[in-house]
Length: 351
Ligand code: AMP
Ligand code: MG
Image 1 (cartoon, rainbow, N blue to C red):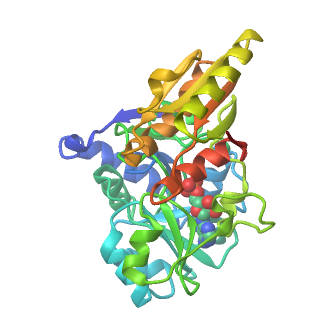
Image 2: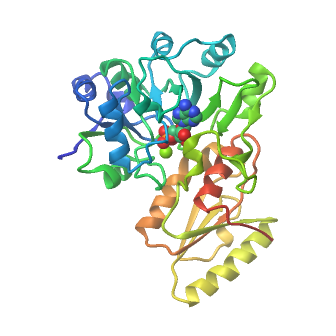
């Protein structure tokens, strides 16, 4: 299959409206289109068409028990795919939609089990990205869109990485530049009381607590030794993984730099290529083949935005061994550490 790559930046949606209509038509006809969102690129298909959902799993190589998130553009659409919107869910929607937050609801019959991975619940998100919103509207209102990467690889934050994974497998890729957030949406299960965070993201536990009171967090988010199964089926898979072996080093800044440099020198002496993920604050101190500044510890948004791009760049540079600093696990740091720990297969060393 020929994959059509088009470019529509936020500022161009009016002049390029006909291209977005074409994307909507492809989706309506059961095809797949990768779309930019404020989190990561999504691999879109018509969420109410089971054949489209099956195509998404095939294109990603994704296990079919890992459900898809349905993207909508307005609240009326939500009401048609769930059995009811609770007062609490409405509050969350008012506060954080459109935006990087997904809620789990009991599903309405119209939603095929192919989309929900066999579950009786459905994940719904209303993105804020204007290109995504317009494509969803032109597609008929319901776009299932998991991250547009091959299953197991870091989620794509740039269209070139979508093309790397999906060229020849889907109908169209819309390049909309780099998203603001760079990490997947927060997922909160509204079918349990108190509501429970299944995947951390830009919308934090603290932000949800301020609105709703008590919020639970799935314990498996930052640990792999609880013996529990993650409640979001997708969180149990090794994810976000670069090709190089990643280890996270935690401790005082000086100790971390010393440890990383010692080990980087040893690995380089063995002929390995070493990549380092450092903060703005410490970056000048590192020695490695590829030393990358992920952003400032005082600006977690900058770290979230760069993380997946850096993991992909290490793949492009054939890096064998990667060391990363550790980051705080409060606020958005929880999302950053969740993705980093998964990318590292939970290899974390305290120095
Ligand atoms: P992705 O869109 O690729 O970032 O992955 C979607 C995530 O949402 C996966 O971790 C899924 O397991 C999770 N998810 C989707 N639907 C549900 C659901 N009904 N219940 C729990 N988790 C879900
Ligand atoms: Mg994903």
